[in-house]
Length: 387
Length: 234
Ligand SMILES: Nc1ncnc2c1ncn2[C@@H]1O[C@H](COP(=O)(O)OP(=O)(O)O)[C@@H](O)[C@H]1O
Ligand SMILES: [Mg+2]
Image (cartoon, rainbow over all chains, first blue to last red; front, side, top):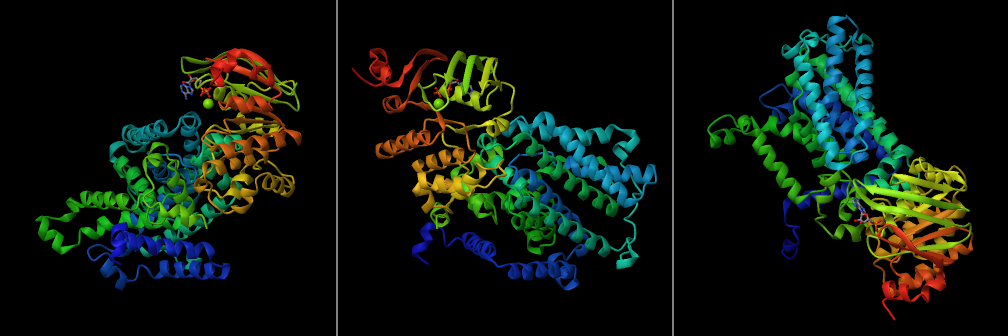
């Protein structure tokens, strides 16, 4: 152990990292039945997660189920959506919150002003998000790296400011009285003031989106995205219509963002432009990168950590005493510190895929300049992968 | 005539990189483009494969004007390229890299895959290694093999010998010759003029975006001007 100290193995984060890597390697070699056991275990875990005895530790100060819906579940859903764009196709999108807003506003506006019912309106919101994804992508996806990031950032702001200045959709006052989801008596879900049914709805949405995302990743589309992410020119030379596939990634990511917006608005009852700030785009991107862009379990873990940590920090007594006031005021700072630390020690993310590691090792992990600037920390990865 | 460039001009922004190049490649030939750094060799290949747009001029393939055809369709038409710097997909295994070359194909691949592995036995030993962890020479083999998997009529090779040890360079040139012998036309870009000229049927010398000389390969080997400028010698 002492001898290993120099190489950084004594670092607890490295050891946790090694544990994660071990789990991932096991998973990649796991048989179908083993995977099914894990799937069912994960689902059971998700269903018992709201239990009060878990909540007393995880969220002593706020209702745990509510925290699980927002921010945790919502961030996960958004992160899975953004992962399609950033993690799979390698496009840096800094305005992802726009699609969340479009999904939310579509439900809010058409349901309150025109009396549309919940589910068709959510579907319409998903459709509108996809259309705006294509409208944003068509002129901008010919740009690369940093330019794309700037244009998408601008788009997120334009959507928010437009909402702020459009009286028809409530302007700065927002839209109140958004209807809840339609009750589902067949499975005993009544959407009222209690949070539990919304939680189950969120879990269902996340499961559907995961299945969809994994199927895509394993398909021809997923291969095309991987090629674009790793070397766009080379992808074109393989006969991949790169522009079309980038547009598709934008549209699919936008749809997931729109779905998240619909579910969120149906629970929150009230939305306003301030619900969709730029910092939310940045936070979701941080979740994707922190967790390990391109690897779904990693991305979900990242979203969980990013959503949960700041909530938890508010409840830490010794922090309260040390800081002399509510740590919630410092939580973004603390959380920034944790992020910096993580990225310094494990820049490829908490739970990266092996492929992603190999990409970063080479120094061109997609995501424009971002990926290129991240150096591979452990050179032994390559020799490991060689076997 | 398999491939023909007619007075092409290509710009990067306002900078003219190619100032009127015309060249022809006949079916079955090995044709070389030689020239110093920045002469426009890479840009010429990128223009043929559709990665760079033309400012003016024409690219003809099999007699058909493909100047406006997007790059991914030119692959289907029969233009395969191994790009400068190899462009291997680092996070894909050797086999996955090769299969990317067959992305648009719906026919059986086994025979072609076997042929690539036969040309490059080294790749066969390393099928499941990540492309990004292969050595420079091995990556060059992947890039060429991957381009072959697109079943090209003409194979564009951009400096396949760059950064390789002399032994490997000789080997790569042998393989290029073999690929050509098996029926694929080759357009080769090289700074390593000596070896390129030796195996080329014809060659063009590029200087700052223009063709300054064209002749059969061996003839250029003896050309005093070319010797002085590109063969380091007398
Ligand atoms: N991406 C680029 N942006 C601007 N100028 C470029 C770019 N790529 C190449 N050039 C310029 O175009 C000219 C031809 O370059 P290139 O085709 O790469 O030459 P070669 O392959 O013969 O070394 C050079 O003057 C080079 O500086
Ligand atoms: Mg070049």
